[in-house]
Image 1 (tube, rainbow, N blue to C red):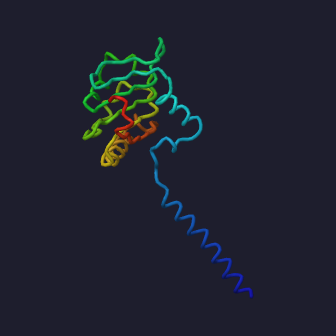
Image 2: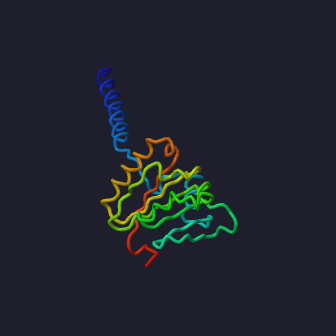
Image 3: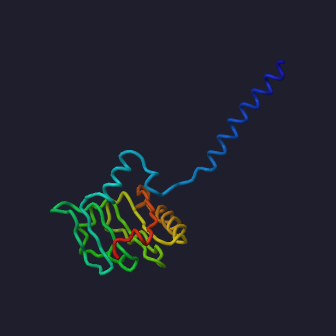
Length: 172
């Protein structure tokens, strides 16, 4: 009887050990809005989707100020990889210095090809949001961000990756 109870106890323990290991191995980093919690999630939603003071660069590279009313810019959105060179434009240095979220939208066929130097004017960056429309781009975005994280500037920056479908596009 004592041996029987010992076997049951061992089986019971093994079940919990294997179950715990399976959960640990299957856990993977998500980069979507649902992976954020509490105040961080609220802050990100406000900066990206809310009415925070924004600076938008569309395909024509003209700056569009939204909701700023003499407030410091908290979010910058750049549409198209060809416009990413605007990140280094010192004419916008005063606008970039307090930016907390940077939204970079990749158009079809574009890749994220940025280095740490491209973000030199962003002193307070907390969130980097990459929007894309091709599934093949996802791995390249994650790899590039992990490369950027190895630098000191991106250690505290959170990444949000959003898949944009053509029907969601507001430029058309």
